[in-house]
Length: 226
Ligand code: DU
Ligand code: SF4
Image 1 (tube, rainbow, N blue to C red):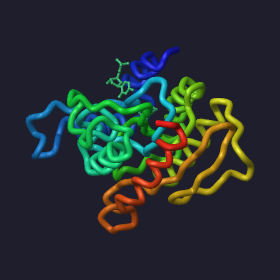
Image 2: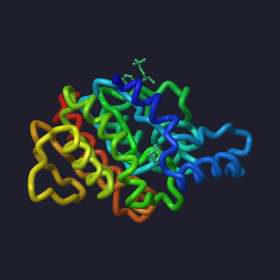
Image 3: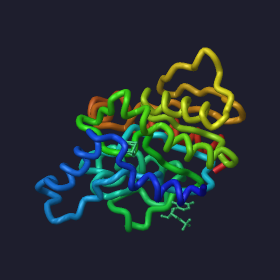
């Protein structure tokens, strides 16, 4: 399969009953400020370069972010933070990500969510995490020939990346390396980088600052010669 075929197939997946119900309920009810918009309300595929050297691994679509716009990290505060930083370090063509037709292009980079449907309270269950894992694993398998760096957002992204890489045939060190912001692990010709997730609970509290984000994403660009 090609990446386009994986994207097409995942976008009609209905394997998780609770998440299917939630993504559709949110899309039906909408938020007052988006009442006139058509929500995507489906699984959100990866976005960016299909021959990426850098992969950014997030958690899951936000209910009124990617679940609304249909493009990963697009239309919410986490995405504003992420793409602004990616633009500052040269990995995105523009600093904003408003909607799927806004012209944003990523530079040698692909952004994905480990779980493809918006979960209630941004929290997938372990069963949902495991049910969705084959999708990201397929994607990682297809990217592996070009991939040099995986930026993992939060501990969830870190674990998902390790599992997907192992599933795709990469040699993962044992014991498994532990997540931390700025942690850098060499892994079978790749580099895994840890970054706190750019969710508001990290960015509002100052746990994750712009310079901290730029340092990790800039390091990714440097390692990938981008
Ligand atoms: O048609 P295409 O050039 O393969 O691009 C498909 C899709 O991926 C489009 O929305 C642009 C995006 N993209 C990107 O963001 N960065 C790239 O380097 C290549 C494609
Ligand atoms: Fe399918 Fe993943 Fe969505 Fe579950 S979370 S319904 S496995 S796309």
